[in-house]
Amino acid sequence: MSSYPTDLRYTHDHEWLRAAGTAWRVGITQFAVDQLGDITLVELPREGDLVTKGQRFGTIESVKSVSDLYAPVSGKVTAINAKLKDAPELVNSEPYAGGWIIEIEPTEKTEIDELLSPDAYVKHVAEQ
Amino acid sequence: MSLSRAPASAAPGAVLVSADMERKRTPLWELHKQHGARLIDFGGWDLPVAYTAGTIKEHKAVREAVGLFDVSHMGEVYLRGPRVREAIELLTTNAVASAPAGKAVYTLLCRPSGGVVDDCIFYKRSDTEFFVIVNASNVAKDLAWFREHTHSLCEIEDVSDATALIAVQGPKAIALVDRLAGGTLGRLTSFTFTDATVAGVPCVATRTGYTGEDGFELACANADAPALWTALIDNLPPGGLPIGLGARDSLRLEAKLPLYGNDLDDDHTPLEAGLGWAVKLDREFIGAQALREQKQRGLATQLVGFKIADDARAIARHGYAVVDRSLPAGEAQVIGTVTSGAPGITVGGSIGLAYVPVALAQAGTQLTIDCRGKDIPATVVSGKFYKRT
Image 1 (cartoon, one colour):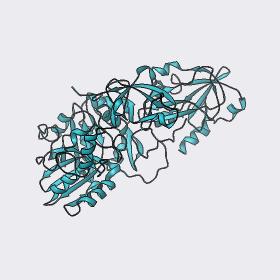
Image 2 (cartoon, chains in turn cyan, brown):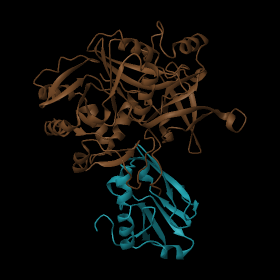
Image 3 (cartoon, rainbow over the protein chains, first blue to last red):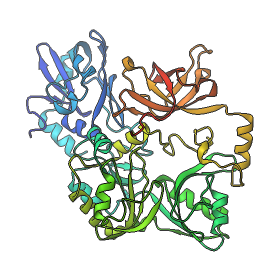
């Protein structure tokens, strides 16, 4: 399915992860983008911040709504997408590319294994 | 991320993703689905929050060309009878009863305390017949209010479930509607209305709106609504779009038009909300005494417009606290409340409305708003954020 690339891992909270060296790049899925509508603001953590799986690491605001971003795995933030500060609409236009949000170096590798496969995520979306 | 939380603003009871409960549908629901609209629960109605263009493009389309809104969820009520003017006098704060026939008048309905039951537009058809369009979330409340206070003075007919309402708004709205009405509507002046035929559909056409732009609102029978909507869509000029609730909210906020449930409620008076122009205290109506007393005493709180500091990159939304950190820590620091907030899509920046102590209501006053745990600076601005030229 084109809107859910098969080379990614996913969460029940509609985030995707892609391996980037020893870190994992995190963004939100097409489903999430479609639900949010036009994104006008992304509040990011700082590089070096520690995040905990399931805890809030930032927020994403559309014209009408504000949603928390939850860390998909625990670890250290090794990069943030600073472009989103001036161009939050990248999340709408390129959710899996230029609209990525942060990179996390996981502390517990097993948390990666617990993420959803593309097939499992597609099934999860179908149930929404 | 969390998608199941309610949008922070302007959609009472709304959730982004929820079980498909028994939501009410307007007669245009099928057409919205076909247009690719994203539907949300808005006070029990399944309504488009945005179509495929998205809120930002939709907002700009209304400012630059024309937009179509399905606002059929709103309530429509007739009040009739030989003594209906007495009923209207009692219910309304503005000069509704005495208006000439054919006039549309914005007014508040007030409680004896001066708090606002609803804000609405009354349409005077004659000295014995008035039509009123009320907020969707308040239909039952308003009907009960009308019946409680005027049942012996007039006959009340609720036609909400049989009536569709389509708003056509923007600089190209007048030409679009006028052409479909055979040139009969272009001369209708602001805040007047007439019975008309638009694209073959019998309507009540009113030169009113909720966007800060010129335009019409067209009320018709449910059964005729799809034909009217389709004719409008088929005749849209370049740049025209159907518009969802997201842009409806961002447009009305830029024009500083209040939203009941956000900026107006039972606990604030129209004077506090800056709507004194719609309150005529030289006659008696429900709430007049309390409002006269409040005016004489002077206001303690006032609804103000604010702009968030550009470098703060935050949106202050409904319910966020206005704080004064120089006061003792805790609840005492909360000195006001944000009632609406959104990005200013046309005017730029991040804008909103808040109730604040009157000492902080002057333009230029610096406010601090607690945006989800972060103190964000904002500046009070006077007047509308957006005024059409």
